[in-house]
Image 1 (cartoon, rainbow over the protein chains, first blue to last red):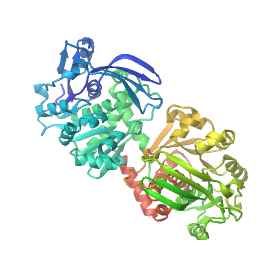
Image 2: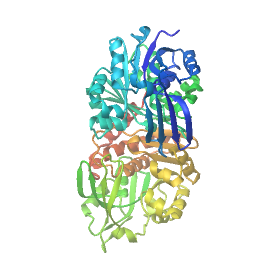
Image 3: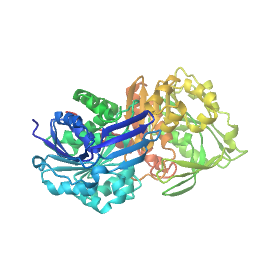
Length: 308
Length: 308
């Protein structure tokens, strides 16, 4: 069993997604699910802290366990149903509208971190209420743990003060480009990254979807490409699986520094590029590690050039 | 004097630009102007084929001549004024509205290619009416010349049949991402690039603004990064100076192949990154070649990572 651990807090959910390619029907999703599957490609033990309702299939939990994903921290609340989200993507897949959000059992979630994961190498706070992210931070040994935060506009708009407290304790933040601009009132992503870094995180990763992701650290920048794809079916989970790949790779290494995070982003980009080729988690669970590393080499070739 | 030649057809113009940073006032611009200035960093002799009116300053023409830019093909039409364009950029600089377009003397332009440039190594057909681009192609030795075409939505919508005839004779096309999708009814840039390549060009370059540019050639792809900037004042001319840097670099080399075009795109990206830091052509004319090569090295660092 792997020595290195990744603690994951996030949602486990049912999604219904409509994209130009079709409708998913009701499928298993959620930030913690995508993240945990992405970390499972690496030599790490992951644990999910989340909550599901009476309607979540036991078989799926077994599948996660088989992938060395610890579920001690997944509360099964039989008093209600699992968090449900329904959304529809626009033609170009860069925008989406939320049609339904039913918090269900997620509304009363009190996260409990399993004892064995309080000193995990990496803790990834997936997209969720900042209050829950703070509660997880309070339970772990933050000195030993690299804290990665993934957040989004919903919390920027509605829970600013709590979000700022989480950001202050974060080592690596991942955030979408538009949301980074919104959060900082900046007019370009470089200024936004600097401002967010001033709030706490030594490493700021601005996610740009099909345009890759930008890493900012002490006036150094790095651009991780996204794979060039013509078979994108559903972008849901791309950001989560990017963050999960990043966390999994980092936890499997002894160092967390600029160079290692650069490579970790490429692995995250590779995992995300498989995630988007089908609805839900199917495409990730059908991907092998050798496909992940092959795409990492493809990404290297994609941006390679000679100077004179 | 350089042995290698670049023939440039495009507009010489007065622009008035409003961006979130301010208003430019009436300044000298135009696709051929930006392209020619960009080629002048390289060991090539360039010639502009264009038209100006009675109001275009002689002093500016002298400045261009000093940069080894041949102006034999620039008609001075004293019966009217120079082409004038006024536009306003949106807050995020990715979109702009045209406020005024006065063709003036450009309306009656019949391009005449100088004798010494009919077998130029590279011919760059800058953004202009496809009929004029075709007329230039009819005058040159297309077997010996690498034809680069830069085009935009205006001609896609209004002059499709003539545009298709130009594209068929093109070796390298540069086109914006949205316009590539529009031109091909594709839903992603990779499919769009394949479809455009089927129309003629062996090399298709999809320009993605601040997200760089994608090269497609026989199922191979390359992603040229754009510099990460926090001092963009005016994006006008970015596409032109990218194409000009590309053309200038290519003309200075003996080979035109996938590897060389990759490096040429990086030089184009470097020139464009200086272009956008001020209104008009000022920033390009104030840039040195060592700054261009330094930024090429920065772009290399920007995308460099180690795999395991």
